[in-house]
Length: 182
Image (cartoon, rainbow, N blue to C red):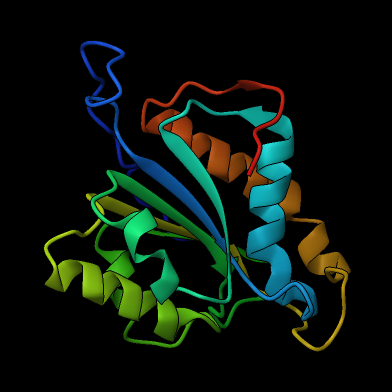
Protein backbone atom coordinates (compact mmCIF):
# COMPACT_ATOMS: atom_id res chain seq x y z
CA UNK A 1 0.00 0.00 0.00
CA UNK A 2 1.28 3.46 -0.86
CA UNK A 3 1.06 5.88 2.05
CA UNK A 4 -0.03 9.42 1.48
CA UNK A 5 -1.71 12.17 3.41
CA UNK A 6 -5.49 12.28 3.07
CA UNK A 7 -7.20 15.08 1.20
CA UNK A 8 -8.83 17.28 3.82
CA UNK A 9 -11.62 19.48 2.59
CA UNK A 10 -12.34 22.83 4.20
CA UNK A 11 -15.36 22.65 6.50
CA UNK A 12 -18.10 25.02 5.44
CA UNK A 13 -19.20 27.66 7.91
CA UNK A 14 -22.87 26.96 7.23
CA UNK A 15 -24.76 23.94 5.95
CA UNK A 16 -25.66 25.87 2.81
CA UNK A 17 -25.65 23.55 -0.22
CA UNK A 18 -23.63 26.12 -2.19
CA UNK A 19 -20.78 25.97 0.34
CA UNK A 20 -20.67 22.20 0.87
CA UNK A 21 -17.81 20.39 -0.88
CA UNK A 22 -18.84 18.30 -3.89
CA UNK A 23 -17.56 14.77 -3.38
CA UNK A 24 -17.78 11.88 -5.86
CA UNK A 25 -17.02 8.24 -5.02
CA UNK A 26 -16.72 6.45 -8.36
CA UNK A 27 -16.67 2.66 -8.64
CA UNK A 28 -15.28 1.45 -11.96
CA UNK A 29 -15.36 -2.07 -13.38
CA UNK A 30 -17.01 -4.73 -15.46
CA UNK A 31 -19.38 -6.89 -13.42
CA UNK A 32 -18.99 -9.79 -15.88
CA UNK A 33 -15.23 -10.20 -15.37
CA UNK A 34 -14.61 -11.60 -11.88
CA UNK A 35 -12.19 -9.31 -9.95
CA UNK A 36 -12.67 -6.59 -12.55
CA UNK A 37 -15.96 -5.85 -10.73
CA UNK A 38 -14.32 -5.02 -7.41
CA UNK A 39 -14.60 -1.23 -7.78
CA UNK A 40 -18.33 -1.31 -8.37
CA UNK A 41 -18.88 -3.94 -5.69
CA UNK A 42 -16.86 -1.97 -3.12
CA UNK A 43 -18.91 1.20 -3.69
CA UNK A 44 -22.16 -0.82 -3.59
CA UNK A 45 -21.10 -2.45 -0.30
CA UNK A 46 -20.14 0.94 1.10
CA UNK A 47 -23.56 2.33 0.07
CA UNK A 48 -25.31 -0.60 1.77
CA UNK A 49 -23.68 0.13 5.14
CA UNK A 50 -23.13 3.89 5.23
CA UNK A 51 -25.34 6.95 4.90
CA UNK A 52 -23.63 9.91 3.30
CA UNK A 53 -24.72 13.56 3.13
CA UNK A 54 -26.46 14.78 -0.02
CA UNK A 55 -23.31 16.50 -1.32
CA UNK A 56 -21.56 13.12 -1.63
CA UNK A 57 -22.44 11.14 -4.76
CA UNK A 58 -21.83 7.41 -4.99
CA UNK A 59 -21.58 6.40 -8.65
CA UNK A 60 -21.45 3.06 -10.48
CA UNK A 61 -19.24 4.17 -13.35
CA UNK A 62 -19.22 0.78 -15.05
CA UNK A 63 -16.59 0.71 -17.76
CA UNK A 64 -17.30 4.18 -19.08
CA UNK A 65 -15.47 7.31 -18.13
CA UNK A 66 -16.07 10.11 -20.60
CA UNK A 67 -19.81 9.94 -19.93
CA UNK A 68 -19.00 11.07 -16.38
CA UNK A 69 -17.53 14.47 -17.30
CA UNK A 70 -20.45 16.43 -15.86
CA UNK A 71 -20.57 14.32 -12.69
CA UNK A 72 -16.87 14.72 -11.88
CA UNK A 73 -16.28 18.27 -13.18
CA UNK A 74 -15.24 20.74 -10.50
CA UNK A 75 -15.75 18.30 -7.63
CA UNK A 76 -13.74 18.97 -4.51
CA UNK A 77 -12.81 15.33 -3.91
CA UNK A 78 -12.87 12.41 -6.35
CA UNK A 79 -12.37 8.91 -4.94
CA UNK A 80 -11.96 6.30 -7.68
CA UNK A 81 -12.28 2.62 -6.72
CA UNK A 82 -11.01 0.07 -9.25
CA UNK A 83 -8.93 -3.05 -9.84
CA UNK A 84 -5.29 -1.90 -9.73
CA UNK A 85 -2.51 -3.75 -11.55
CA UNK A 86 0.45 -2.87 -9.33
CA UNK A 87 2.58 -6.01 -9.85
CA UNK A 88 1.77 -6.98 -6.28
CA UNK A 89 0.36 -10.19 -4.85
CA UNK A 90 -3.31 -10.75 -5.69
CA UNK A 91 -5.43 -9.20 -2.98
CA UNK A 92 -2.93 -6.44 -2.19
CA UNK A 93 -4.65 -3.17 -1.34
CA UNK A 94 -3.45 -0.04 -3.17
CA UNK A 95 -3.97 3.65 -2.39
CA UNK A 96 -2.74 6.43 -4.67
CA UNK A 97 -3.13 10.11 -3.88
CA UNK A 98 -1.51 13.48 -4.36
CA UNK A 99 1.74 13.17 -6.38
CA UNK A 100 1.20 9.42 -6.93
CA UNK A 101 -1.92 9.98 -9.08
CA UNK A 102 0.01 11.36 -12.11
CA UNK A 103 2.45 8.45 -11.78
CA UNK A 104 -0.56 6.14 -12.06
CA UNK A 105 -0.95 7.25 -15.68
CA UNK A 106 2.70 6.61 -16.67
CA UNK A 107 2.32 2.85 -16.10
CA UNK A 108 -0.79 0.86 -16.95
CA UNK A 109 -2.25 0.01 -13.53
CA UNK A 110 -5.94 -0.38 -14.31
CA UNK A 111 -7.93 -1.89 -17.17
CA UNK A 112 -9.88 1.41 -17.27
CA UNK A 113 -6.89 3.67 -17.00
CA UNK A 114 -7.18 5.02 -20.54
CA UNK A 115 -10.78 6.09 -19.96
CA UNK A 116 -9.97 7.52 -16.55
CA UNK A 117 -6.88 9.35 -17.80
CA UNK A 118 -8.93 10.75 -20.71
CA UNK A 119 -11.59 11.90 -18.26
CA UNK A 120 -9.09 13.63 -15.96
CA UNK A 121 -7.14 15.12 -18.88
CA UNK A 122 -10.35 16.52 -20.39
CA UNK A 123 -11.32 18.04 -17.06
CA UNK A 124 -7.86 19.57 -16.66
CA UNK A 125 -8.01 21.00 -20.19
CA UNK A 126 -11.41 22.55 -19.40
CA UNK A 127 -10.15 23.92 -16.06
CA UNK A 128 -12.62 21.67 -14.18
CA UNK A 129 -10.28 19.17 -12.48
CA UNK A 130 -11.18 17.71 -9.10
CA UNK A 131 -9.39 19.61 -6.31
CA UNK A 132 -8.17 16.27 -4.89
CA UNK A 133 -8.14 12.75 -6.36
CA UNK A 134 -7.61 9.48 -4.51
CA UNK A 135 -7.48 6.09 -6.23
CA UNK A 136 -8.25 3.01 -4.12
CA UNK A 137 -8.12 -0.57 -5.29
CA UNK A 138 -7.01 -4.14 -4.95
CA UNK A 139 -4.62 -6.16 -7.10
CA UNK A 140 -6.87 -8.60 -8.99
CA UNK A 141 -6.21 -12.34 -9.10
CA UNK A 142 -8.37 -13.12 -12.14
CA UNK A 143 -10.25 -10.98 -14.63
CA UNK A 144 -11.71 -13.72 -16.80
CA UNK A 145 -15.42 -14.18 -17.38
CA UNK A 146 -17.12 -14.77 -14.02
CA UNK A 147 -19.64 -13.18 -11.70
CA UNK A 148 -17.84 -13.72 -8.39
CA UNK A 149 -14.71 -12.18 -6.93
CA UNK A 150 -11.78 -14.52 -6.29
CA UNK A 151 -11.15 -15.51 -2.66
CA UNK A 152 -7.98 -13.35 -2.51
CA UNK A 153 -9.91 -10.21 -3.51
CA UNK A 154 -13.08 -11.06 -1.58
CA UNK A 155 -11.01 -11.37 1.61
CA UNK A 156 -9.82 -7.76 1.23
CA UNK A 157 -13.14 -6.17 0.26
CA UNK A 158 -14.11 -5.22 3.86
CA UNK A 159 -10.81 -3.36 4.16
CA UNK A 160 -11.41 -1.55 0.86
CA UNK A 161 -14.91 -0.51 1.98
CA UNK A 162 -13.42 0.84 5.22
CA UNK A 163 -10.79 2.72 3.22
CA UNK A 164 -13.58 4.52 1.35
CA UNK A 165 -15.14 5.47 4.69
CA UNK A 166 -11.76 6.60 6.05
CA UNK A 167 -11.08 8.82 3.02
CA UNK A 168 -14.45 10.51 3.47
CA UNK A 169 -14.02 10.94 7.23
CA UNK A 170 -10.49 12.29 6.74
CA UNK A 171 -12.00 14.85 4.35
CA UNK A 172 -14.41 15.96 7.07
CA UNK A 173 -17.47 14.12 5.72
CA UNK A 174 -19.82 12.86 8.44
CA UNK A 175 -20.98 9.29 7.87
CA UNK A 176 -23.65 7.38 9.73
CA UNK A 177 -24.87 3.78 9.80
CA UNK A 178 -27.55 2.87 7.31
CA UNK A 179 -27.61 2.83 3.55
CA UNK A 180 -27.40 5.30 0.70
CA UNK A 181 -29.23 4.89 -2.57
CA UNK A 182 -26.88 4.83 -5.56
